[in-house]
Image (cartoon, rainbow, N blue to C red):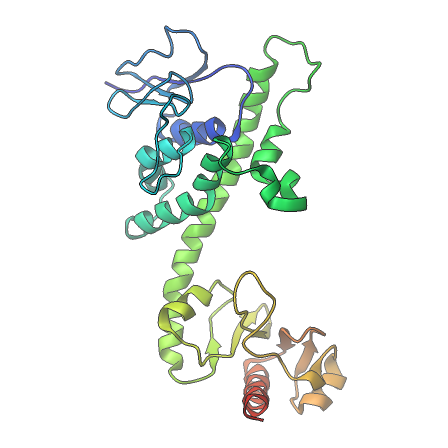
Amino acid sequence: MAIDTLVTHSGGFHADELMSSVILTKLFPDAELVRSRDARWITPADDRIIYDVGGAYDATAQIFDHHQRPGPLRQDGQPYSSFGLIWLHYGKDYLAALAVPAHDIDAIHSAFDTKYVLPIDLLDNGAIEPSVAGPLSVLTLPALLDGLKPVFDDTSPTANDDAFFSALPIVRSFIEALVRDLTATARARGIAQSAIASAGDSAILELPMGMPYRAALKDAQAEHMLFMVAPRGEDWTLNGIKLSDDTFDQRADLPAAWAGLTDAALEVASGVSGAKFCHNARFIAVAGSREAIMQMAQIAVREALNEANA
């Protein structure tokens, strides 16, 4: 039987059922979304999916709550929220509906779960506190979604429902953007892997455009690569390779003599005609042609290796 009703609880809302609603309304666009705690709605039926309400988790009966005791747990013992349960059972179909390539769906489903679903699950179950985000806690997605709730003295009987349905397109835009990013990262990985293979023993990685590439470097164990070059508009860039996402430290810095220089001054300091700019922090330089940027890259490699061997 076709699904014609999606049911979640009435009253205030949180990130888990909002994000679950985005997944389910994409897969069942003709279904009515009902917010209720009435027994006639939260009783399982073949034509409905119930989530974040109902006191049970039974995928066969299409009910996905996590508030009962004991609540559903992941294989590693961490708790599910309704979003985790919906993502577990419907996430891959959702990715397919967004035209994610079939060969990437498993990896992207897992990556999205780790990066975006699990934190929602933990927070909703009180397994982590918002304060773990430090001073940025008020800027996390759950906190921002909380800000879409009606204010305390809004006495309209439909205030919560109105706010919920106004929040849905906002949440949808976030989730779709996150999936697009993961899908693009998967595409970039393949491109970068080919470029790394083509570069061989070179310390310079040349890419056809700016893109995520460090995961491919890790996969290839290409520790010998020190800099990356790529076109940017009519110019070319020379970039240091960060050690990780959590630091600004690089495998090697651009030459100290270039720091903060532009145009003629940088051409003199580097000896490269067409050199245009080097950031004072020595993580990026720009030149007007591929020939110029490759000359700068080769100089940067020589200086980095000399410094390492000094």
